[in-house]
Amino acid sequence: MFEATVSPLVENVRAGAARWSALSVLQRDTAVTLLLTPVVFAPVTARIGAEFGDLPPRSYDVAGILLTMALWLPLVLRRRWPGICLALVASAFAAHELLGCPQTLASWGLYIALYSLGAHGRADGVRLGLATAAATGLYVLFALGLYDRGSPQRMADFVLIYLVLVGCWGIGRAVRARRSVEVEQRRLGVEAARAEERSRIARELHDVVTHHVTAMVVQADAAQYLLADAPDRVAVSLGAISDSGRHALTDLQHLLGVLKASGGMPAEGGATDDGTVGDRTPAPGRLSDLVEQTRAAGQPVELTESGERRPMATAVELAAYRVVQETLTNALKHAPGQPTKVQVRYGQAEIEVEVTTEGTPATAASPRSRPLGRGGGHGLLGLRERVGVVGGELLSGSRPDGGFSVHARIPSTEPV
Image 1 (cartoon, rainbow, N blue to C red):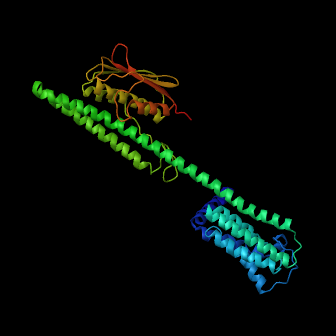
Image 2 (cartoon, helix red, strand yellow):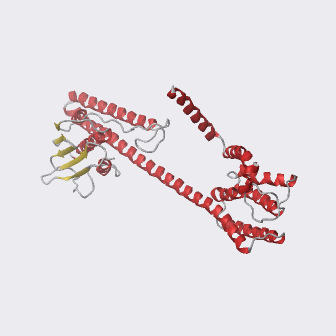
Image 3 (tube, rainbow, N blue to C red):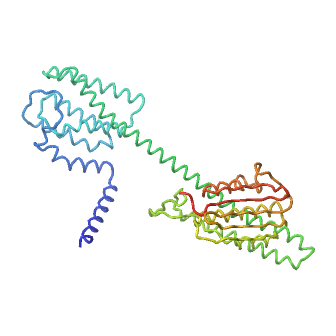
């Protein structure tokens, strides 16, 4: 019974909050100002109102009522036009005090207007300096007017009041500065996330396109030689090219689907348009299929898997898959026809991937020099970045006896 009562109440609160958020700033300030008007104008709250001059009070008349309303009602503009709001409220306050109108809580509108100017005003630099000088001059004239009308306040009192007014504006200014810092931090965070997303997309495109296109080029080159020497085997090469093309299209379509499903959100695994959080990391294929595709391209590859394969995060599994894919692509490009061994060991806490290619590649590289399979910075360098994101490490380079190797150690779970 209690839960049945609370649920509609929560829904009503949420619906009300949504409707309130849909209102403009002017509409919300108008609603708040009008809702508080009865409290502000109530006689019982008049004793806590602001009073600067301590002049003998006069009875309420039409002028006093209008000035009291002018102290509060302009607050509907406090965020939309804070400068106009302060000018109206300050003018009404000065007249209210100089005429000795009765004390009222509505006079707190001056403090609110000053805070709003600091928090929402846009004056900076020279404009701010001129506005401050003008406001100070007007305050001096206001203080002289009160003194001329017999105010018992001393100069020290007027200085203290002035500092209080400046403090109200300063608090608003500090809030605005903090808000600006938060906005800038969010902007930088979004830009960093977008840059990371672009880098991720570039890695995916490189890994998908380079592998399949390299296999197709190698198979097409082989088919040219087979036309003269073994025309009966051309059909096999053409079939392999067709298979590689279909695999490339499938992977590209999957990647495009990932991009569309992201809803424009920049970060991997971030919130989607409906506010949910999901993992947008594309699922990898099977290593055995990858090895078979490479064999079909004419590269002799041997796959060995050891250890117990346990469930792992998609990003971790994809990183291991890309290590094998990129290395086999390099073997096709730089050591065609050379025997290649792929060893994958599944441990308790990590996956170990080692790919070695025998012989002397056409473009050998040392471990610290340019990586094999140059691709505009998206080859083994991008692979190191991918493995590093999930907390692993990757070493690559030429072997002492010829050929080259790639060795990666990847934790089974993503780092928190």
